[in-house]
Length: 283
Image (cartoon, one colour):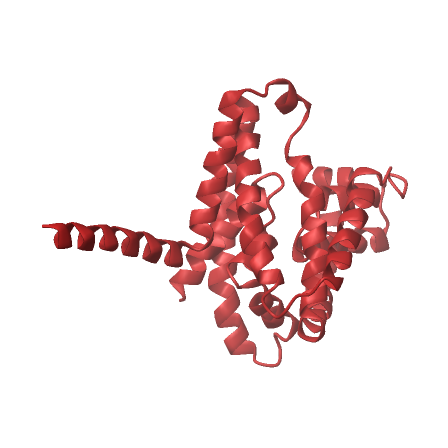
């Protein structure tokens, strides 16, 4: 098993339970998003190879969610403002690395339009959706399948707020209730929709990335920017103080360091090596 991807999967799982931080965005930063989408979208073309790549990643993701969901829940219930400010710092720390991925295959001024378009769509979708569809309480088979497809789409596309998407479709309350009550009459068809959604949406996203990489990631980057303010709530604004700035800075530096830990360790090593060399010359 690829233990490197397993441990990255754990960090991605933490991103999946942290408010405002997306697991798929962390996959982008780790350089694994395109590989993951390609492996899912073409899973039957090279089944064994794709499975060997996906299994440790998904296992790590599951471990990350199970280990840290209760930790995150405890922190939010007991230290909400500091926790949310720390998460804000973590998210801001991912921006330079995400931006680097956006520009990886060439970038020019026209792509700023795509970023702004993604930002505007995100703001309209996540803040002014006003429940586009009526709330579903007694779903039919089709609506249960659509629930699974919606969860798949919001999980696969980086920068998309799952709660906002499900709310706009009138499915959020249904999703939370059916999971909490283990209502298999809803969860089984939703699981079918989830599986189909993952395969189809991954296939589409994979094609978009291959044929228009920078445009696709520019729009995704804009969407991601739009959800950042949702990390904080009213209590955070009211309780803002000097300590809040500390938590933001801590989260930012932590994210920046662990986002490219291998290169950062090398830079630190070289820095201390140069200091040691200078001391040796002086002596």
